[in-house]
Amino acid sequence: MNAEVFVDTNIFLYSIDDSPAAAEKREVAREILRTERWGWSVQVAAEFFVNATSSKRKFRLATDLTNSLVETWLCFPTAEINADIVRNAIVLHRRFQTSYWDSAILATAKSLGCHAVYSEDMNDQQDYDGVTVVNPLPSNSSHEVIGTTSRIPKLTGPASIGST
Image (cartoon, rainbow, N blue to C red; front, side, top):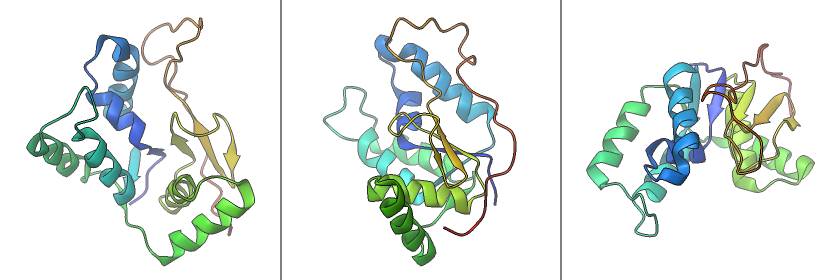
């Protein structure tokens, strides 16, 4: 299964955040999940489940509802973590000085054929061996957002699938 973009945990979390402060980010996140050809990994699924059900979250979801969302989203391209992804993540970690977990996301995105990772947590517009990180979410700066989809870039072209 291939995808065009890889969706990081924070996009899923914003899609369920009903707080007024997160309204713009929630709409963009939901638009991504509705319209993009996205994929994710079991790592992101686990991170979402843990964070969405955490008592530390103001917008905590019930376990049954969170499980239902995860089951629905598992119908999309979902990469498992395997030995090759671990090896490639370590290579990316060494090369780009990213955390191992971010490197695992980048390696997994590449394995799915994604040309971009949608994330708020990595360097926006940074290319990591053919996979570009894009922060599609509106910032809290004075930048004006016109429409909810204006921040979602339409990237074209295949990911570089060369060896790492």
